[in-house]
Amino acid sequence: MSAYQPDHIMALDLKQGDLDERTIAYFEKCQEKLGMVPNVLLAYAWHPEKLAAFSTMYNGLMLGDSGLSKLEREMIAVAVSSENKCVYCLVSHGQAVRAYSGDPVLGELLVMNYRNATLEPRQRTMLDFAVKMTENPKNMNEADRQSLRDVGFSDADIFDIADTAAFFNMSNRVALAIDMMPNLQYHGQNR
Image (cartoon, rainbow, N blue to C red; front, side, top):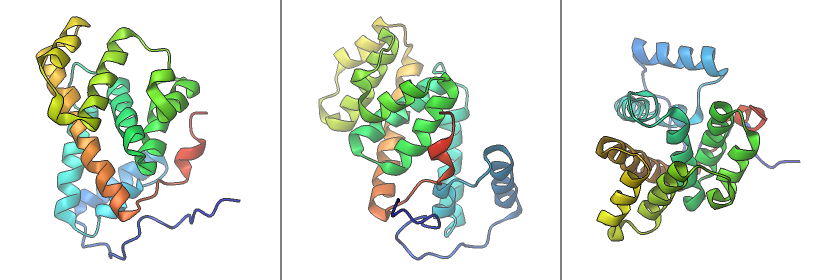
């Protein structure tokens, strides 16, 4: 039996702030579409301005216009989170990889170690770049960017890869520092 507490959102005792109508509608839309309000949103709900900034950045990166598919962006989230051992993002974004790819095995392999997954050269190069950014950002160089161009990424795509990897490095660090836990629903979805 799991020791995980279903009501555990994070280790900090912060009370939800006064949410405006827009945020309440956003939470209701999450409930309708996902069957839950993701715990990351509930964790930020103590400070509505931080929640709005986080949500705007996340939605722009993960759902906005990009040369990267939604699956590719989720793959970056998982590869970065795997390197950082971020339970929240591995569970939630691992589920998103399963959903977008229709492949539960791919989702699990990316969570454990993307290097073991059968990937197209474009995807492998993208994840190699994102993981190097995670592990050794000071050594990023033109050869790293050129490797992405060589498999068909534009400079705008490279920016989006870097932006997505950077966002998840930040998010992972916050989630790890406050012991943010994923919603239980993610564990059984798209298997």
